[in-house]
Image (cartoon, rainbow, N blue to C red; front, side, top):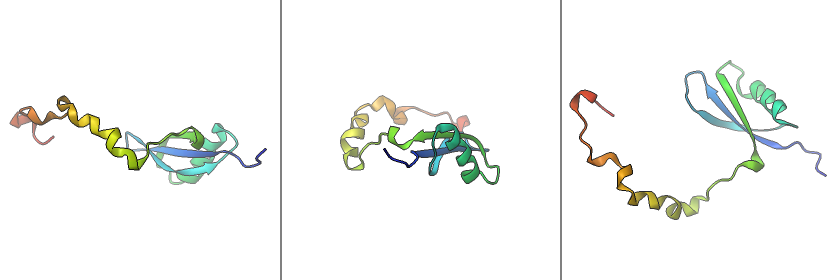
Length: 94
């Protein structure tokens, strides 16, 4: 049995942001303590409004070397690319 606490990935949403972003990792015995540690370590200047913690073992990522087969199917779906729409001039830059 391991005596080391689980590793948690920390995501913070800043005061002026809409998205949470990954800021680092830390060890903690449970999710509540991980949030408290994350608050102390990653939001020292009161810049965060929300904290997410996720056990590292629960994250599954794609393999960068397999990006072709993973993302290429979207290229055949032309309706996802708004290149054939006329944008009125009053809309401005999109």
